[in-house]
Length: 125
Image (cartoon, rainbow, N blue to C red; front, side):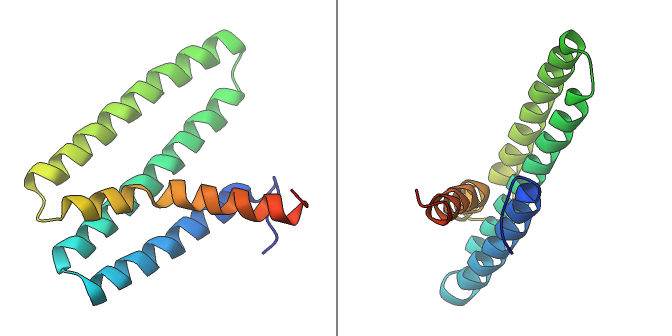
């Protein structure tokens, strides 16, 4: 799939999901079940967070500027709080490995970095 500005979010979602699947499978094969569960949980939280942020920004773009800023700011802090509570509950009560969780949470960042490198090399950069 050729990545451009029209399909970049789809590419990010597919790439993150594939990377998450590969990392979770590798963790199952080479590490413990709790590590693999941490990778999977962190990846799902990261991808869901990315989708939620995208949804907020899409809705904010259709509002007048003052209302959009207020709308986005409130939902940004709400999203941040819910993600913080979710990660905290996973750490405190989940039977998952903390390092696996951190690896899973970084799936979207790694995918964005790989996509940036891919797009830069595609454009001769």
